[in-house]
Amino acid sequence: MSARRIAIASIALVLSLMGAAGTANAATHDNGVCESGEMCLWYNSYYKGGVWDSYWSDAEYTSADVFHGTGGQINNNSASVRNRDATHNTIHYQYYNWTGWAFLVLIAGDPQDRLTLPSEYKNQFSSFQFSAIG
Image (tube, rainbow, N blue to C red):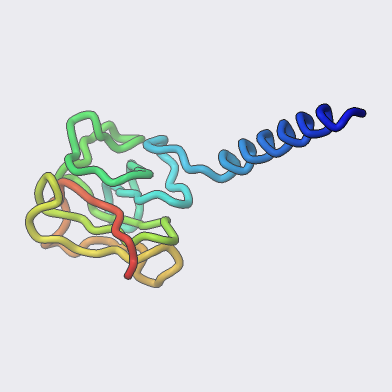
């Protein structure tokens, strides 16, 4: 086999392996499954009822953001939260555009990576963002 064919075959192999590695464990945004790398909200306490999952920060929960399994909107309508991202905390805000009071949910694997909200925080937040640790 010529050196050129070997080089082309090697490049093709590397590219195919990179593509497989990139998609093997990628989470799917808003599919109703709380996957690694996502932040997830539940309609009810203790991670029951409909779930909404996000792979990126959201500055405004809109009418299109609904819980899978209930169809209910998530804005000001969530009772429990879990962070499954191992490299970023999540910060949840009272109002749109990351304003108002806020609470922190720590990275995946930490004992505080999930939270059933106390009554004063249930159904009272409208945005969240992933936050770098440090």
